[in-house]
Image 1: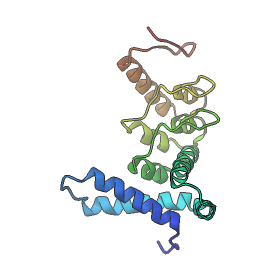
Image 2 (image 1 turned 90 degrees about the horizontal axis):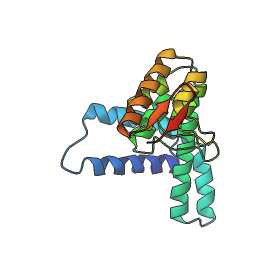
Image 3 (image 1 turned 90 degrees about the vertical axis):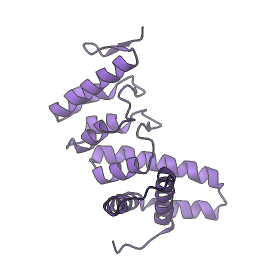
Amino acid sequence: MNEPVDDFSLYMRNLVSELKNVQYQKGEEIHKAMKDVLDETIDSLIRRTRGLAEKYAAAQEKNVSPLVQREQKLLDLGLAFFEAAGYNDVPFGEAYIEAGLPVNFQHPVSGKTALHETCAYAIHPDFGYMLLEVKDCDFLIRDKRGRLPYQDAYMFCRSVDLADKIRQKTLEQAAERNIELDFSSFEIKIP
């Protein structure tokens, strides 16, 4: 990686490093192979968001509060994660998830999650399969039109296997939460 390092790149490296240090405080060390994979995913995340560095540099010149900057960075990373789902950018998605950022981020305009986006627009299902493995992924979040991710998968997904697995996960989460789903009309009934 011979790319020039910018302030945002350093910020991302420090953020992920801090998250990892907190996670391994009890004396555990990151195995070298895991560290190499983590470095690779961080680099992917930095490359994907490199254009944001100028934005944050300009904000610092305007004396924007660090708290406001932090919230803006998290919003921008959430939007980048959402966009990565549509482009099937798995390395960015893995880096985002590895950094502990919210996998259920909802787009502020559409209310869609990355799972909605990958079901509706991704040509390849890899990003969707990655989200299936994430423990915190919520399959019952509805977008502003009231659609579940499975509905987008049912209507638009190019992978029948992925759509079936999303349906199964949706039904499992609904059963855990005592929510009755009717996929024939895509209505939800809460007892």
